[in-house]
Structure formats: structure tokens, C-alpha cells
Amino acid sequence: MYTFNARVRYSEVDRNGFLSPLALLDYFQDCATFHSEDSGAGLKYLAERKIAWLLNSWQVDIKEMPFFGTEVLVSTFAYDFKGCFGYRNFVLKDTKGNELALANSIWSLINMEKAKPYPVSKELADAYGIHDRLDMEYTDRKLKAYKDADVRTADSIVIGLHNLDTNNHVNNSQYVSMASDYITKNGSGKKDDDNKIKRIRAEYRKQAFLGDVMIPHICEEDNKILVMFKDESEKAYANVEFTLAL
Image (tube, rainbow, N blue to C red; front, side, top):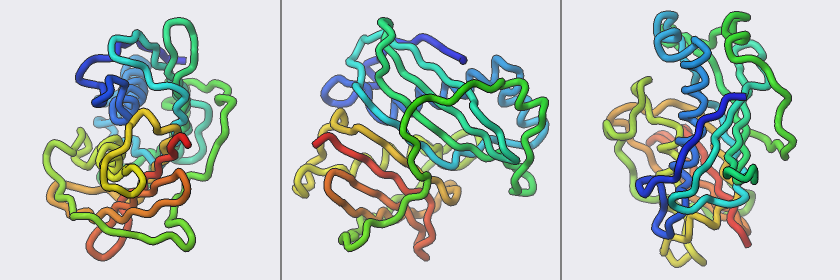
């Protein structure tokens, strides 16, 4: 297991002072990239081989968001590799060992020149190591509109430079951040509290690049909100679902 220490910064909190969903995913993503770097399979290693890890899906279960200034431990480990796929868990704990959030993620290794799947080599798998997966609920990675639910559209989003990462596409956490803008209270249009989010699921279908136009499609069912980002021909970029505390 790979772990780094952090302290919740003011720049990482929501308007109520708790760690934001975007910052939580950034913690987990940073932990994965630190793990890669320190195991010798980081950005330079991948770039030299013209390969990259692309995220297929997130499932993040939130027990309690830490408040500003809280010292936390962010951990990750790989638990399986199959073909071009890598499976990775994450844990956020406080310094007393209390679990604050757990996550599961599925990644694809891609040849960036050919835009095709690239098998995970034994060398790469050995660099990360394998651990037993977390004891948590594992949901289906696929997301689709709820049956019989009304679907509304919101204003289109044009992708800017600030949305991109080192792969020159929209970073996975950016979709979650954009989707969180559509969490409303009782359909009022007023944004609900981020710290009521108890689960985040995200499915990534197609890469979005600079200048692309995404149209959010939103539907709700009970305490769940699903935001589907589509292009102008209704092909999906990503689907993000929030489960809120009742």
C-alpha cells in the first residue's frame, strides 16, 4: 500500500469548510500518480513507451468529509491486472485511523499513438505490486438514465485549457466537479451541500479535448442525481452519479 500525508487546505474546501468532492478525487488521483512515480513507472516511464493510464470508472463511498485543517492519510494499491485493465483501491483516513472515504477504480492502459489498448506487462504490474482488495460494496461501472425519469438539458460547456491534464484531455475529476453544479435542493435550482454526497460514481466513455462542446443531460431518482455529458450528436463523454444522504 502506498500512502502520503496531507492536511486539508483552504483551497480544497467547499463553502461549508469541508473537503470538496473535486479535492477528494484529486487526493486519490495524486496518490495514484505518486505511487507510479515512486515505483519507477511514472510519467516519464509511460511517455517513453507512448502509453498512458486512462480512467474507466470511479466508485467513491464517502463516510465523512474532513473539515479544513484536518490531517489525513491518503492510500492506494492495485489489486488486479487483466489484459489492458488495472484495478485500484483508495482509502482516506484521519490520523486516528478512522476511514473517511473508500474508492474503487478501473483503468485502461492505452497506446497513445495508436489509440488502442496496450497489455499490462509483467514489469509494470510488478512495479505496482498486488494487494487484497478492500472489503466494500462493488457496484456496476456502467451508468444510464433512470427508467421513467424526466431528463433535462443544461447550457452547453465549451472545454477550456483549465480543464486539461498532461494527456491533453479533460481530467477525470473535472467531470465530477462540473457535474456537482447540478446537485439541487428539492428541484429549486439552489445548489445543495456538497457534504451530503455519500457516493460518487463516474463512467468515462469518450475523451473530451480543447474546444469540444459538452451538453449536460440531468435526471433524478429518489436521492440520486445522474449527469450525462454528451456531444452534439448525443454520444457520451462521461456519466457522473451522486447519491445524497436522505
